[in-house]
Image (cartoon, rainbow, N blue to C red; front, side, top):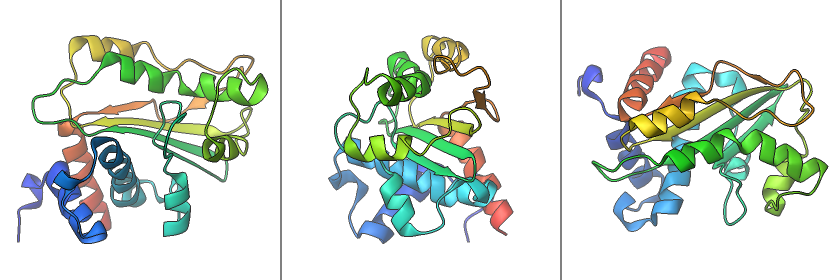
Length: 199
């Protein structure tokens, strides 16, 4: 039995893909692999650490993966009982750096999604538009996770530190806990915490 302290998120994700899809992760296009990583993080990590904010069945989980064009910088969106879970995942090759622009796009997503619904200012996929239309922008609490297997550079961290752009006209917009930027080290720690919580 592997030492839990040495378990790695990336390796566990790769094993999960092979078990779930009966395919090697190496055969899946990177965009699709990143979306799968967001689902794996939601189900296998947040599902154990924060079960109240994640989908309860496979159908809901699958419907929450934002597929195709006009995803507005969000891979996973799910709303339940006043909580909105937003995840953006980037599966990067070893040694690759995370892009500050991708982080910024995610942090600006609440503002962009709200504008798309209220002013038609941004184009959304039909699936994403339906999910966003369920959000109560005045009262819902947002949980935002940007997860990456890339290296977080100073530029990327600085962009993250600028924070979330709140939707126009929403005075009580709330992200709790604070938005999370998890690199591979952070993902490994969350994975191990989730295993401990499950046990």
